[in-house]
Figure 1 (cartoon, rainbow, N blue to C red):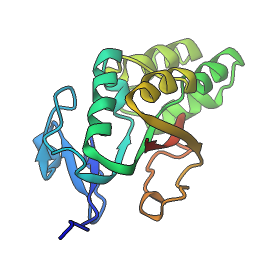
Figure 2: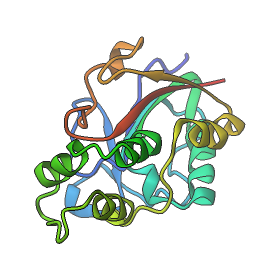
Figure 3: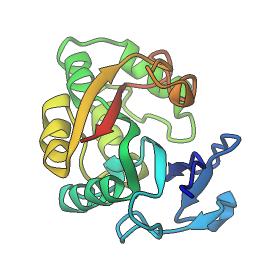
Figure 4: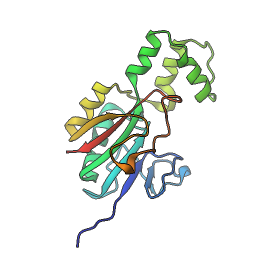
Length: 189
């Protein structure tokens, strides 16, 4: 008899909780079902999960760590499984900076008040954005594809809270109004 259980993993979930998902985080304070370091092999067997969700976590990994993490996600997903990935959009962040878009500063001051700006310049915002939460590598679409496609994923850029898979719709916490993110459904090939 085959296992028809739909398994959904929220990797690097922090305090975000999705009913019916297995939450995995390195920090036990968030009370995940599984405590694990995403820089290490994931503690799940091959072809275990149907869906993975990760939001604003991969930028905390170095590029080699992220490439290994993507290979692990591919290993853990069932054939045809989907990885919903949100991450900072480097292109949008830098475009806002180059264009002198003051909405970038307003966004920072509204969404990250615990780290006050001293100069209130866009240059300070970009520098803090790169250092915030121990970010090691921030992606644009091209660099994300270059990291994930060799691991065996087909990436489809999607809109906030939208997906062709009902299980992945409505999960995104960071919106275009409160973050500078890009959204992808990454299907295991």
